[in-house]
Image (cartoon, rainbow, N blue to C red; front, side, top):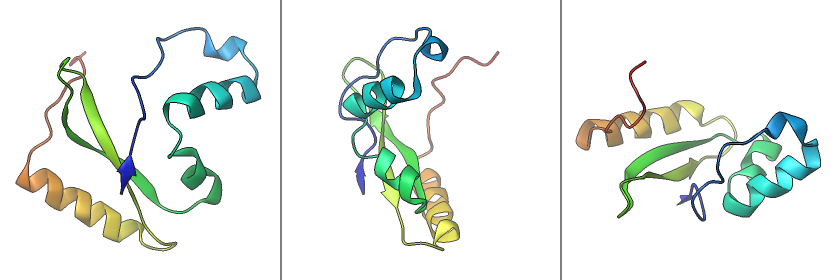
Length: 92
């Protein structure tokens, strides 16, 4: 279990105009704990865990050993069943 983000994410911008390394460094600045799991290929997922005082959603990252994807998905299902996740995105 880790935080999904260390701080609020940067504003949307022309990320496609930047190089790969520049994007990795920028993203790692606000999300330092998620890239390692992406690079190793170990199963990990972010799940909502409430909202910040500003009203912005926040999340935690669940990580498992190799081969435990179904276990993580089941845990996420149980968490959502106990505390339904609130939709924060527009319905368009």
